[in-house]
Length: 340
Ligand code: NAD
Ligand code: UFG
Image 1 (cartoon, rainbow, N blue to C red):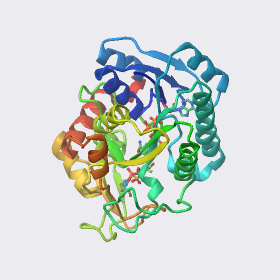
Image 2: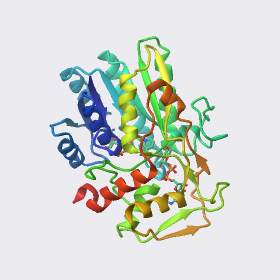
Image 3: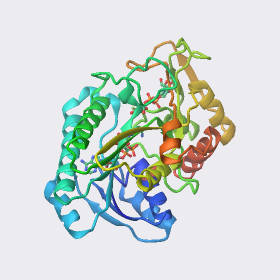
């Protein structure tokens, strides 16, 4: 299939492009490079041993999208493009609503006018808000509002996609709800490359390990979890990438909207992640436990991933140890990410 990948130069997109090519698909990437570098595409080309079709365009620009859809016979779209920094979204909500919503609407309109109806959308476990219980099933009631504008854009987009599916206009829509993606390609040549001080745990840990940051602050130690620190479902980015390939090869039915968790089903605490990273890298990660919780954080969030297995035949294969080893291979070979 010819797959259009929006945001394909980004962290998850670049790993997914490789899995798509490995599974015989052709890929067209559109990315405005607002949170990524062209170098990620160049390195993905090196891994797969072939050139990729890449457009540096903003997908809010409908004319630019029209040109791409007119030039290529597109069979399906994986829509990664979006802004994702939770803290920034609280400070600059309009930037997030503008980018994430307008880009999605413009993409859907152009898809509709070119009769391309198969979509896989990057959603997030953030749509569950503070879950009533874990592991979280897709049938959990979604809150009307989540705690930050970034998460709210995911909730609004999912609602919009549900509305689209019931138009009976032959849309086939899969929203993959990612838990916490970590790790890097096993080659160590592509990985997560935050442009600023990382907000997320794994890139922070690896930048402390490489000596770019002094120490990690563990946010909160009094959660009702086994060691008092936050518990998350960390999913290797290559496993996550493969879930997209599975979603395309077992597509939603005509007029179907389906939301599927992509996680391992296993919760790992902050302290357990630090320890797994230290073992995988052989490097000590200095940290201090702050009594202060990060606003908006929840105690525990992990998936019931059984739907992904029953519908897509997909299951996470890699362990936390694999992810830590791969993150460290990427970080130590590229201390400054793609910037040399
Ligand atoms: P990323 O920032 O590395 O990738 C997103 C890409 O989209 C970037 O390359 C960016 O330049 C591009 N982009 C943003 N706005 C664009 C626009 N208007 N036009 C064209 N390109 C645009 O992020 P990621 O971690 O790879 O995340 C991919 C998707 O998965 C995002 O939608 C994100 O919200 C979602 N997601 C990520 C996580 C996570 O923890 N990484 C968790 C859940 C969901
Ligand atoms: N944490 C620390 N110190 C840090 C960073 C994080 O202790 O410097 C802790 C957090 O308090 C939390 C855990 O590590 O307990 C994981 O935090 P992350 O920021 O890595 O991940 P979150 O689960 O908070 O959020 C991430 C993405 C969201 C997404 C959500 C669910 O940032 O965009 O996963 O997919 F919505």
